[in-house]
Image (cartoon, rainbow, N blue to C red; front, side, top):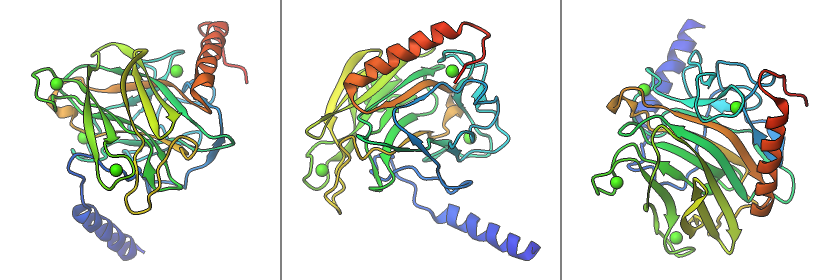
Length: 291
Ligand SMILES: [Ca+2]
Ligand SMILES: [Ca+2]
Ligand SMILES: [Ca+2]
Ligand SMILES: [Ca+2]
């Protein structure tokens, strides 16, 4: 038994050492985790606030979510800033995961239910500048394809001297081969301030990206050159949150996420957000959420 376990660990270590690491994460591959049981499913529309009684402080592997982090790290945190209620999802340095892609990884349950998600939103707070890159990536497990990917870069990839660039994974030539790259949005994230992020799949293979309620980029859906397929919204079946574990560049660097919503269409997103806000006001502080 021990030998078998030892052998398996050896194979895993070898696999980890030899696995290719994407140079800039500008890949259309979806994030995947082999940790724990396979993903469960959840019916749309999807709204997640990470609050009691469904969520308890500690591991984020609750309510059908998967993660690829050390199991004893607390990730559902009451110390978070981007939040309503008292808890949110915190992404921070895991001492046992080195820098690379993806570092810490969180995967939502699989979304089911017609007509399919076309708008994704979340509340995001990144503590400071100069640390890790943080990613929000709606994806299609069924198509084996990233649907969109927003990067909050801790440092200064566009080289203009100002860190904190927000970049978008875009397909500059649509269905023609190639063209996939992270592109700058000319916007930087606001360190130490919470903001809403929204990704709207608006049809015609077009995606609109918002930060703090402002449109920061309009781009193309991502096409898989091998299959010719793309995710234009309805195919979106999972949300991935990840980083590159480069927090060591800046003390106290982390990201908090809350109020994640995946809704069938952009028009409905506003209604869901309004309903969520109204519901949260009605709960009042200290009251248990009724379901
Ligand atoms: Ca919350
Ligand atoms: Ca680490
Ligand atoms: Ca910059
Ligand atoms: Ca292309």
